Image 1: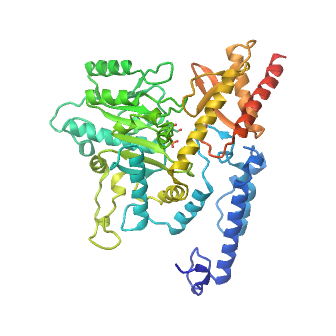
Image 2: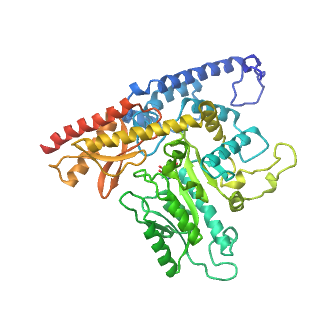
Image 3: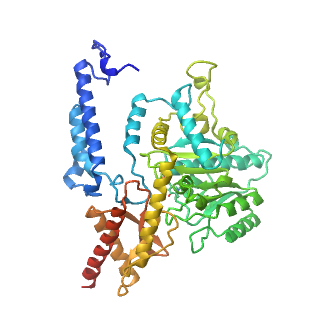
Length: 508
Ligand SMILES: Cc1ncc(COP(=O)(O)O)c(C=O)c1O
């Protein structure tokens, strides 16, 4: 390819405007700015461990964002200076090596650069006859094979909520079709033959992530259609209860159509008995979906693969690449075993997108026909570049490293007189609290909540929190490829020392 440095910039165009620099000198200035941006970003990323994990944004800084829209611009240099001074220091810190909040990935330098390439090339991924579409198709094929359902249809989407909702939508379409209806034509009821449709219901454990409620509402099922199955002491779905609920619901005139297992629950990292759920689904003719938002990626680590066994029996799987896949936001994947039914759920031919036999629209809008979005960006490039550069094996090793560190942390918590593990830690999530005999449950909640805030506000580390059996829990969700063993030690000792400090303060 021609080196763009030697391509003269086009002559200034009299009377017209563009967002491209207008002169060779302006191109040179933008190139210089771009190099500075890159240097600044790599400088920060390579020194994160010496920076605070988070810092509060001062009030004066917040007020800068109340200004009205700029009618005249301030120029790229000034806009970048603004970013560097007033935005860059005040992120939530999820790129930091001691960030363990919610389940948020860190991103990688190479994926950041790939995002620049993707945005620079800016291809439209509705489909089309183009290499970027081949890249997305290849990424989907790789993951379908890695997850054990080679040949599945799939799509890259924004996140786990979108990927799971997509799969539930396909399951709903399949269920209505199996009952003789067509949800796309007629909605949910009545069926075309006049039979009154029974309310469709689906099942997931009580630990299912909040996307399920939103999806039930959005798909017109109503959130009561999402039946929450109790969990056992390991926070796994109780399959006896599941069978019982299905039977009872049928007796009560409801119409079960899907069971969702979770690989890696958001609260504790538990994985349901996926083989067991697959068996129930086979016997009861139900769609089997797996929400593997982060846990599904454990399949890439040889030592952890057994923990998510059964996923390969699913009709659909949703997982994020912006969590344990280390990709910058946004990036998730949905896989549907029966690619044809996925296509039938979303296909929407339009004259203005009709496929041609040759040329740029040969093949048509095949990705748009697999999901909701028509205009889609080149998310696949960052995934493809990272995997090409480092390989699946390295991602698997980092996932194993995170689990080893999380287990070591959980063991250290369990062994410490002032700390208490509040749930088993089978994968990468550790729920725990600082504890002292002298304090009531309410006081322990207050102490641990304050402990969390001090950890954050002192910029030491960023775990998040949850409630388990009514108790406030510090929650360390570890998908951090940057965390060293020393970072883990630092978090543990900071928790103990702030906890000790609070015990004394609160006892006064
Ligand atoms: C198990 C599970 N499912 C779904 C989601 C939602 O994913 P996203 O935040 O990418 O929409 C999460 C997010 O943490 C999750 O942990």
